Image (cartoon, rainbow, N blue to C red; front, side):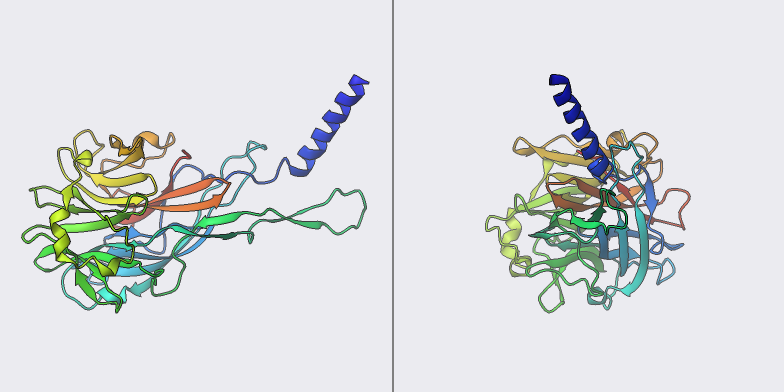
Length: 374
């Protein structure tokens, strides 16, 4: 009797394995650094930023490039980036599939195209979290026992809920209510930060320091802190403004100069050398630095928020899989994070950055790589 019961359990397990065992259950990219073909040119293309992508991302991207002026001045350009990460079956011990990437330039970023000077550091201040909704388009699998020849397979949707997504392709980079685009420009001499108001007009950021260069803003939506880079101390460091009101209708206060006195250095990120271009996604903050101990030039670093504080920054090469060369003897710069999140399923994080490493189209090129699962 016991042997019969054990056999039935074994048989039911085999049937379950037959039905469900080889279904895609894992989202993970094959290790590697991928050039963003279609966007790169023989000139310098960098400072790219995009908000987080869904499983199949069709995203609006803004990046700085000097291609239009043939290497003379930087302007903000737009592009369309499509990245697909297919799930695979970990039970079959398959290798993770590579990212499928397509990119194309889409012309100047109109709101910042008319003023003089170099324009760099485009950043959308907008949360990656969205109201939860079903995400089933790519997951309609068909099952059939095959017991009745000629029988039509039955549709069986694997229900997934999307809770983070990218800025969808819309040709203009329109953001959700309250969100704004920020960038920096040296049109008045030094680099200053600007934001686009409700009329898409550039307005100066309240924290610009006369005589200093201020650039690369990012917003921590979990703790409501605005971070940016400045060399007001003599070298580039990261500074912050803690937003006590938690107001994320940014155009209402980004121009309020009375708030400037509340800006302070974020000393937890400070080291010898320059530290700049911060970007935050959730509990992960990434930045570029030429501090001692790197691989050469500017490297990419990260820090995690744990136990109520940001932890000691680490070189991101340390978390990359064997054979993946993220930081090199060349410069790696302006990192940003693109996150795909399906509730109750795995999360995919992509790191977008620029580098003047050998093998590109020329100057700085744009690259993307998948971050290891935490």
